[in-house]
Image (cartoon, rainbow, N blue to C red; front, side, top):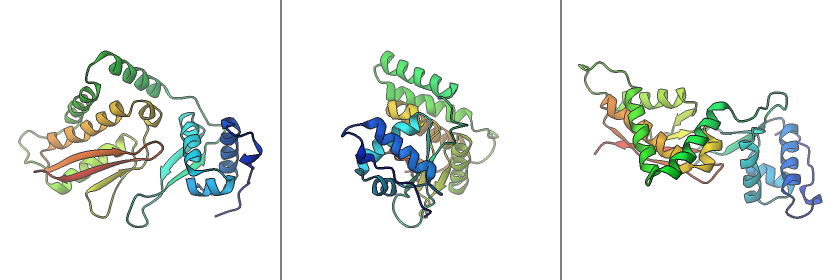
Length: 226
């Protein structure tokens, strides 16, 4: 790893969140490659949980990008962070603002919003799969290829684990919204995958969409249909 600047977050008063976030951003901008939470915590003398807390807000405000490193062995791949070029950083996009507004409305207006989101995603997934009515059902391998293409098109940067039963969604274009309404956004995408497999007739089932607390990525567990 290249040499990075080491601003001292400890020079700020305890609890000074703005100073800590500024130090994180300065360190990321000076780094020659993306950094992990552990590397940032060591560089700044901060607790790793504090680093995660501040990174989540930097990501939400479009100042830092988050992605998963390529898997190097068993277990969850590391998350790495990069500062966004200050000349290209923008406010949340229109689609993110719209998604946020709709998610908040669903939560307020409906008694079981997460189930509504799941069914809405399922219906959308079915409509997104174009298939000849006379075609035979898709096989397991075709079903996996379908999920990969579907989630890549949606901007999730999917990658299968070696066991072919875990699909890592390494980026989330709805991250700022899902941080606020995970029961809506993540259930919708779970339904999307299930609906696509239903429409293709693939003998696979997405049993869960595991989203750990921010800023961790999503993990879809895919198993043979029972």
